[in-house]
Amino acid sequence: MVNDNPFFSVIVPVYNVQKYINECLDSILCQSYKNLQIILVDDGSPDSCPAICDEYAAKDSRVKVIHQSNKGLSEARNCGIRAATGDYLLFIDSDDKLCDNQAFERLVEYIETAGALSPVIYCSGSVKFNNDQTSFNFKPPLEDNLCLSPDEFICFVRKNNLYMAAWTFAIRRDFFTEHSLFFYPGIYFEDMEWFPRLLFAKPGLKVNVFQKPYYLYRNNPASITNNFAKPHFESYVKILDFYKKQMQVLPPNLFINDLFNSGLYCMFLSFAHSCLAGDTFFKSSRPVIASLFRQNYHLLNPRNKILYLFILFSPKAFFVLRKWIKKTRKD
Image 1 (cartoon, one colour):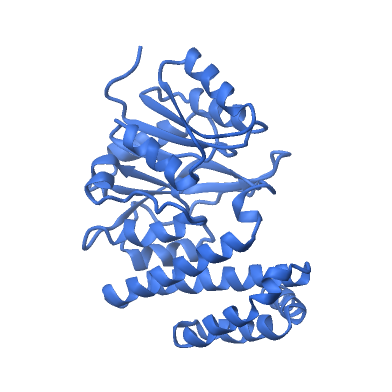
Image 2 (cartoon, helix red, strand yellow):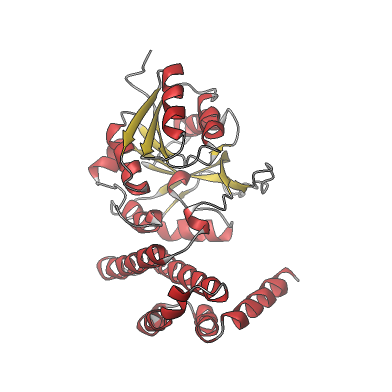
């Protein structure tokens, strides 16, 4: 029987992941906590995923399948959000999975006992794993009952080398819709554009931190984050422009500055990798990259300025320097 009052609405965008989709959905349906609505958005997947999704819906009434033409990850998530009826929204990418069958039960227990609770909860217990099931061990920080401002939150994430993505958040649905926090359509790396809108949606908003094992992020070579081409480059340019506009609207804060620097560094790093691989588009984009460096020089973290210069003039030398810096830090 379909539950009309689910506590969690779990939104799973599905596209070209027939190799992983069963593992993902099984990890959701085997949860000891059962009060779920599971929304699978088939984003025009060209493989067997649409049929697989329908099979799961036929077996479990909590599963709702929406088929649509291919519109991209943002629109797939937005479609799922509009269909959601749960108290909280959760996002799971269809090539990932939950860490065990008690992940949701632990999250519910945290929500029920945390006291003054923000509508935004960060799930810090998310780790990367490979197809052979090896993963980084999750080591929870020592702090208890964390409720952090955006600046404190970015320091916490960086200090503990944690992930920040849509799937690391549990968000009250009423808060999400009230502040129209839908994902920006038509770009890659949509999470990067979304973070500031989420954390500055309401003045003084803080983030609760759930620190128990939760999510396994697959190191998938075919994923968007592991592939870079002209549309990805153009998306980075749009996102960086959005950050600069946010800097003009918001009071000076570490969170936006850190996101801007991280985004620009990722763009430069992708440029360096692509140049060494002989990608002609990125070689021809050097003037654009150089212009971004000059225009935003005053916003860059001091240590990054030298690295960017190395990337611009000699990507090969940059990787030698980067390797030496990493080795020095370990020693």
